[in-house]
Image (cartoon, rainbow, N blue to C red):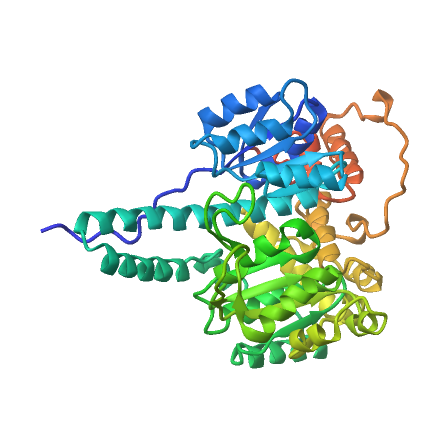
Length: 498
């Protein structure tokens, strides 16, 4: 008798691999520094010919491909990759300074799934890479399941009946796919909200109430950095939809040319490069929640298509003749005044009413200053627990300084300030001098060798401070500039041996 499988043992998934193709070393270096901290395995190529060899050998999960290169250019490289059975399923994102419409059309016709214009923003690259890797992973899993079911059908020789059973099994398997683990669900529960102010108490009450009404779409309004996505995740993971997918979408980052395919899916042959059926984000989120961030900046054409789905609950993949019913809760977020945009014609009134079944207004941090000490202590605890270090205390002077600051970046800004203060304080207490709240000047004097103290410990402290100043307080970036990881930077500053 075969013993039961040990449910506590889980196979470790291999690191996702990204191939960067560009003939400019500086671009390759910037892309590597942008993506490597996310845990991806980075491989590079400087020509189209090299990219074909590397892709065939290393089988990356995603390719960032420059358009203009010596030899065969990016467009031809993409065509050859899509013509090869071994590499045809790898998603390709073009990166190029050419932004003409014709170039975009040629890129998508060659088989690309997205297009990023130079000079690119690192946050944009990270967001798009993460999104397309998630979609590719789900698509690959569904494709593999489909292939397995098709083999079973053939072996059992009950083609029609078994095919229907296989499709049912595949559909059920797709329903169990989730973009977040159980650990993530616990992390994004209501316990993640910190504060005792009346406004936070009202938000918590609203979230608890809305968790029981999953048929109501929710619009979350608030400034950047106030925690709108946190509210969306709490709404999802505290509801009876928590076992189904939560899929976040940045509406600004969706190219108009790909919007319909990305949201609603497509069938094989719908357009050049559509080599297989692909589910859209609405279908992948079926039974769960679709979080539409920056909804106020959604292009008008996409607004109309979204409204159609919200009205009848059906999506029609590009090239399909039949619609598919989906049950998706929409949580939208914006930092814009949508009613004002409705009045000046930039946002559809009918779409606004569909999205705003219930509106949650998230106040800026300056309007709930009584929560700042709790938030600061919370972030200190989070960072020190992550590093396995004792949490330093906040002095009264530090708290006074924090509560007096306006925090235009809201909770996100406070989080960055506290993380930097943990390094500045050296592990004792966080005092006012360790809090860097004012924006740094745009220009800085160039340091010379005479500026570095001769004392080794003092020199190290000076270099860490310079790196933090140059990174606007971003600890991850400062660690990268110093050639160490965040954990090492914390421990070096706090006097521990590593």
